[in-house]
Length: 342
Image (cartoon, rainbow, N blue to C red; front, side, top):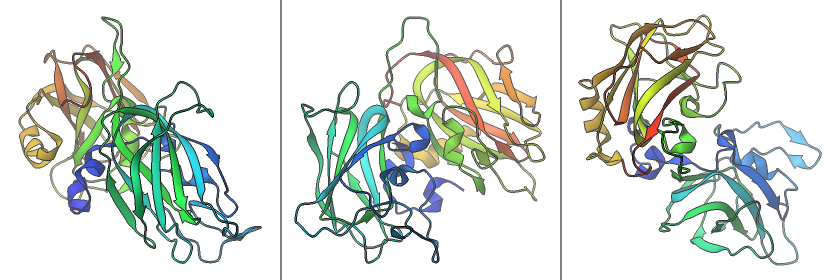
């Protein structure tokens, strides 16, 4: 099932952008004017917000998000976060899930580009004007800024709660010296998942995250296949490049790792992410980058000599046979053009 099939009404930037406010990718909560009921760092968590009816703490009802106390003296609350990577912002999802009588009624967001954390001299630019929010809902807003940003300042009016803030964009790829390889598939370099056959368990977005998985839920896992065929995922690389090394990590997958895997690849510089259905169809006929290889439980598999020389590519189709779980997939190579243009 593809992301589009999961929810065809969500904006394109959600389906194809990288969440730059993901704590799992390295986003950090730096400052909040108030976090009496719930701390700011919960707002950056990757998992969907949850509600536990009978859970309370010393300050009152436990809420999965950022929640300030009720303001009595005027003004409004605000928070500052550091994005996981510098990047251009395509749009926002301000999610008030489970906040019903205590959601923030309005939001405004500013951005800055600075080395290190912001100071009093930091110049902030409005990237999302005042927008009304409602109870327990996702609020999607486009961002018209074309600049690269490192930090955000979120204003809520006058107070209340936000369950999750997701900031979808394109990470800025750091320049590299001639001949230096980078992780072309990494989410922090702009790699993004366009579609997949199934993602019943775990968090499939973590497949392109940094580090090793911390448990079996930290990666892509499909349900047990009861029909012929195999599972697959289509991924756009962060930059066009020639792949010369691949890692397939089955960390924590022991009784449910795939038996085999293969990778197909293509240069689709003329395609856009809005043509995902066409890309998925086309991917069945792409050339083989990595032929079928055996996988093992809880292991980092490193492939170099097995890779075919297909020249520079922009997209891959990762096939697993017949089903199972993979914690991380990494493709290394030399970029040949800037991210965001494939």
